[in-house]
Image 1 (cartoon, rainbow, N blue to C red):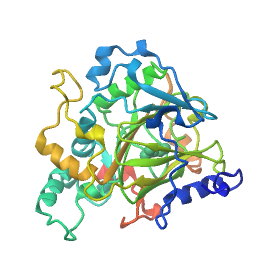
Image 2 (cartoon, rainbow, N blue to C red):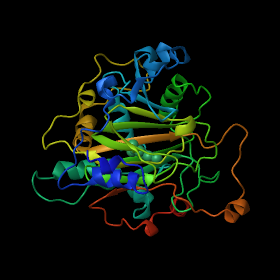
Image 3 (cartoon, rainbow, N blue to C red):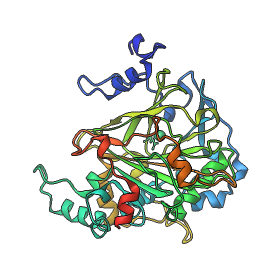
Image 4 (cartoon, helix red, strand yellow):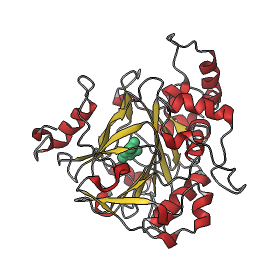
Length: 377
Ligand SMILES: O=C(O)CCC(=O)C(=O)O
Ligand SMILES: [Fe+2]
C-alpha cells in the first residue's frame, strides 16, 4: 500500500477509510491483517484467555468450542483489544444468522423499517421477504425484500439515534440466548461480571459501509464492547483515541468475535468495505456445515431447519450481519434524569448507521427517532 495511506497526520484515518471503500479500481488488500492466518503479521500476538471462566458444557450449550481451543489474538499498540478467530462449533453460526433474520427484527425490538411501516407489517419482515424471494425470477430486477432493506435492529436498551443516548424508558427484554453467548465470551476475556444490556445489529449488503465513529453512549466504559460477525467478510478499521489518528485494517470473517476493552474501548473504528463474494460463490465454510449431530435439547443454538436455512442462505450469500453487545450501566449506576439529559448537549461524534449505495434515505437528519416509533407501535 502507498506510504501516504499509513502516515501520521490529520487525515490518516479518513484516507484509510476512503482507500478501502473505493470501488474502481478496487484496493489492494495485502496490508489487511487476517487473523485466520494466525501470527503471520508481526503486530499480531497470541492472547491468553481464562479457560476456567466458562465450563465446557456452558460453552457447548452456547454453540462455542471449549475456551482452551479458541484462537485469541492481541494487536501491538492496541492494549485491551482481543480478536477471537471463529470459536463457534460447526453448524452453530446458522442459529445466530436465523435469529438475526427471523426473530430479532420482530417486536418488541426496534428496527430501521419501523419508521416507514406499521407494527403489523414489521412483524412479517421474514415471511414477506420469503414470499417475495420465492416469486423472484432470477436475473430480473424485482423490488427489494424487507430483509434487503433492513439496516439495523436494536435490543435491550434501544439506542436513540437522534439523541445518541440510551434511557430507562426505551427498554425491552434482551434476548436470553444472546445474553448467554455474550456472558461466556466476556468471561473468557476476563470480564465475568459483564451483563448484556443493549445490542445494535447491523445488516450490511455488499455495497454497505459504516462510518468512522466511537461507541461512547454507554455510561460505563470499564465494560467491554463485544462484536460478532456472520456472512461476508468485512474490512474493519481500528483507529486511535482521536479521529485523525492512523489506523489498522483487519478482516472480520464469519464467526469472528472482537472485544474492545480497557484502553481500546473508546477507539475510533469503521467498516469501509464488505468483501463481496463472486456471483454463485459458495457460503463461507463455517456457514456451510450443519451440526455433525443434533445439539443437546437444552442447547441455545438449535439446528436450523432446511427451509429456513435455504432462505437465510439466499440472504447471507450477499450480506454481512454484525451484532454488537454492550453493557450500558455499571453496578449501581442509573440513567440521568430527563432534566439532566436536556441540559447536556447531545453533540459529539458517536455513531453512524450502516449506509448502502442504493438506500433511499441516507440523509442523517431524517434518521428515525426510536422513541417516536415505539410510541406509535
Ligand atoms: O460491523 C462492525 O464490525 C462494527 C459495528 C460497530 O462498530 C457498531 O455497531 O458500533
Ligand atoms: Fe462501533
